[in-house]
Structure formats: structure tokens, C-alpha cells
Image (cartoon, rainbow, N blue to C red; front, top):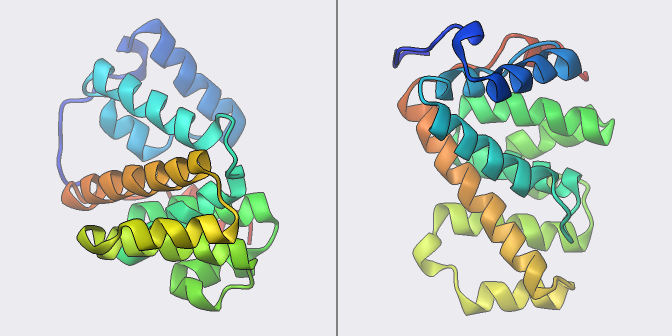
Length: 185
């Protein structure tokens, strides 16, 4: 990472964060660089983790796979190397389909997805590249595709979160962990 903020050694983090980093090591074999980057400030790291875990892992009418699909499409529109690498890998792993992950990275419009998923990804892409023009008509399109008001909120929230993280990762030249590149291929 190009922007070098003072980061404490893991052993100097508060107990809850040390335990979270240990859980990452146990579950995925490493601590994602985005978490390492946030570790300069325990409050910011906790806020990031809380928002990420809520948006990506909590109950939602949008499946976890679909939330990863949104993350990849937003990251592709923003050309965020970190998030494309990390969430492309997560999408490959969750779907069991390396082609889907690669297609969404390159051009989501040619991906083999359902009509409903295409509407969701079109909305996420439009909200990313033309936010001021994304309004009632776009939301009507989601409703017509079968999304509830809660689902529309979740689609917008995941889209917004990844726009924020993409910009932060790009602004700080955050690099993905090497482990992401070869997994789930």
C-alpha cells in the first residue's frame, strides 16, 4: 500500500480486533490488506468491519452471491484493482464458476445471469457511473424485475459501500493480497 499510515503490530491491537484477525487467518489463511490498512485506527476498523459484515453477511432478500456480484460490477466500473481481485476471487469461490467471476470483471452485460440479476446489476452499474441520473425510473425497473423495497435498499447500500471502498483503495494504492490471484480458478 502506497499510503503508509502507522499500523500497530497485530499483538498491539485491542483484543476483539486481534481475535478477528485470528479468525481471518483461520478461515481464509490470511488477513486481507484492507483490514490491515484500517488497523491504524481501531474505531475506523470496527466501523468498516461492522458495515461490511452487515451489508455482505447479514440477512437480506439479496443473496450473498448476488451481493458479491454487485461488488464486482461496481469495482469493474470504477476499475478498482484491489476490490476486483478480492471480490472476483470471492465470487469465483461462492459460485463455483470461475467464468462468472471473470465475465463480471470484464463485462457484466455478457454474463449468464437471470433477468432479475441483470436488472440488479444494471442498477448498480448505473448508480456507480451516473448517480445523479439514477432515480425513480431505475427503481421502477427493479420493482418490475421483482425486487421488494427492502431489496432495493440493500442493492443501493451494497453499491454505495463499494463505491466508497473502491475510491479509498484507489486513493491509497491499496494492493490485494497475493493469495487472491490463484484461488478458486
